[in-house]
Length: 600
Image (cartoon, rainbow, N blue to C red):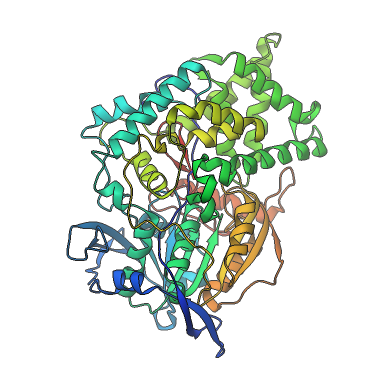
């Protein structure tokens, strides 16, 4: 969708899901730690084993690509119950282990979304994955069905029809009655398009199908069991695999975790919005409020909002923007409009990064001046520069819906809507979103509207083989579950509850800022690496601390390293470059979606 009014765009967020069958006990191979003690695990069900094992092992015809990687495509069954029926093309990329003589195997990696490109994040691996892991593993990324370099899903026959359908979605989230009406209409149009033109691929994009694809590809790269690292929605894919193929796990780490029962919707919760179950808005609000509280504690010298009450100042800006958008006439960028939805969306985007607290404070301080009719021209000039700069950066990230056809939103919805249960009528979302906002201020509304195209009256396509649980299987190796206290997209409580579901798991908590913990904390990164390499689990109850803490200066050496990291990130975009300490590149999180619409 075109973003025509140059208003502040919100960057991204998204979801989680799976599919499977019954499981029986088994005695698995030794744990990844290399011990001789056998581990009792559940067994892949006969039905699930039959689905994947009767598919011949693909011959991956690797070819050199992107200077240092290898690429391949493979055709896999569209429906695993019909192994000789229609197929879909899936793209795979690997970066080979640097020490082939000491190579452990392949590490499959998924960046989330749904709709994130596994091939892109694998290509980026040398810039954010730790050196020892790069030495010992081939890093393998798979573009899930419908995504990226795989056969793409298309819900509309042309860009013209897609653009018309998306028109009402051209806001961070709807705020006025007119915006809500337009958003509902577009949600229905997208749901209908994906349930008709988008078929048959939209009915074969469930997380369960991706888990099956991953098991076949595990065999294709020569690994007896799966080693996996999944971020955000990738945590859902990891949990699906663990429960569908519990005896085929060597090591499985999930970071930024969504509870799969909340993702799918169980029992009475099936009629609730997904946000009511996952509470991403709660996580975002807690992170925002903690930043504002720490701002007050740090004082005005470290945080300009501390000259008053930061919590009250943020609400004052929000209140003013709810009443009236700010319009700035800028000589370089023209007319720049900032609405209340833009303000909240921009803050959510800022919360995705460890240093995002500075963006939250700077934007709020600038808009505190610009929304005040009594502010002087001298005070307004620097505030206008600050806001237009952020607006320009956001606009560069936002998708412009011109040629060629972009299916970013459709890849997200193709998984989320097909996997999970959602309210029946898109027309119910204005009331549902308002209720969520009262419960989780500012962000409840945004997160609720994200799945309005999934309303079941208009999104009617389903995957008959989608997995809906159970999610409490005992795996052949422990699952490492990593949760970040201040994650604005995957609420920390998702990690806690997911770890409780999996009987053979270990929870690692991190007092980190931003989305996911890997790369934001040397402690968490080291613990994840040790587990992947040697199967060594962190101590029970261990809590790591993020390298960056709001309003606390980094030591000079650490600040220098982070500057190098940021430089590498800018070089990234296709193959992100990073120094030490390594962090997830922008291509991983957040993931931009349609206009200002956001994805996990």
